[in-house]
Structures are given as C-alpha cells and as structure tokens.
Image 1: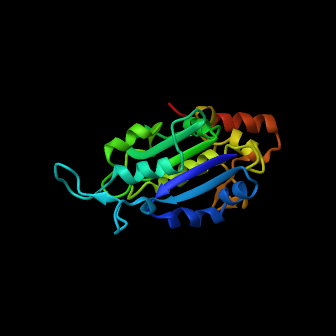
Image 2 (image 1 turned 135 degrees about the vertical axis):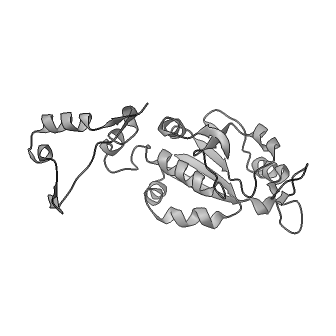
Image 3 (image 1 turned 90 degrees about the vertical axis):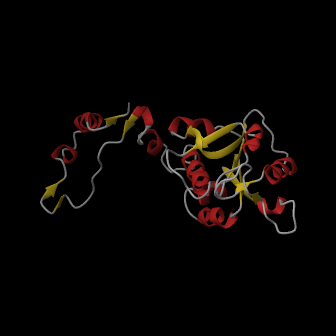
Length: 216
C-alpha cells in the first residue's frame, strides 16, 4: 500500500475526487491511502494565515516556511528510503510515465501544494524532489498532486481490472497508442479501417504497431 499525504490550503479540492475511479477502488481495496492535511492548522498566528509578503518586494504572497516545517515535523515526514517529500513547482523536474513508475513503488509520498506566488525557497531543503507537470502555471498544486497520484495509482497491480490496459497504453515503450475505433462501423461516410474488421490478429497487430507514434 502507498500512503499519499497532501499538504494543502484546500483539502476539499482533494477529497471530492476520492469518490471516483481510480481513487475509490484503490482506497477501498487498501492499495492506497490518501491523507489530506490542512496547512492552516499549522499557522503560527491567530489569523490562521500561512503566507506573507516576499522580501525584496514583488506582487502576491508567498507561503511561509515555518508552517510547512511544523507540519512535516508533527507527521514525522523526513527524507527516507522508499518515502518521498515532493514540492510541486513549475521549476521542478517534469513528471512523466517513467517517474510515475518510480513513484508507484514507494511506501509513502508527501506532496506540498503551493499557492499564490510560490513557496519560501527554504522549504526545498526538506524535500526529496521538486516536480512540475509542465511549462505552465497553475493556481495551486492540488490539481498537479491529483494528476500525479492518479497516474501512479493506475500502475499499482490490482487497481485496473485488466493489467493489459497499462501495458498497452500510450507512453509505454516510448510510443503513443494507435487509433481506436468502435461502433458504428460507418459514421458520416467515414469507415473503420477494414483491417480491424478482418479478424486477422497478426495483421491487426502489425497495423497497430505501424500506426503507433514514436516519442523522441
């Protein structure tokens, strides 16, 4: 079982997703556990604020290091083998299927979800990884954490009904999956390729390999 901890200002953004696949099945079958932690519970003031203005000036607010450190300390979340602490940041390493496979073998993964204009840089020293979904900016790290958890969870044996679904997916073997078709056979004069209707599994497999796009 993998335990996912998500440190966030908005636990409700995470919890609503847990009612749907693949999270629901994975949780009910004890394949994963998801623990949402409200960062405001670790505020150092009576206003429950966890952000402040950046030193040196600038637009927006920055999440403070102290509440995040206190949260990690109270949950005894440290850099350990088979346990990761991930800061979600646009400047991090880009998440991909290869990284998802690595994450799917961990015992525990903690995500620190940024908000506003970012996170105090001193938080990085307590993290094992800094990860980004890509070259774009999100309002916060919650959607990124959910995406990473979903991709990683799908790779855990028993989460999907058919293990072939993972083996033959896009990005496996550095290819994008071949085009797929279903009924009706003809739609607005556009027909399904005849080879897929032939019943010749060898030729179908050859067609699928030919029409899978290689990734550089």
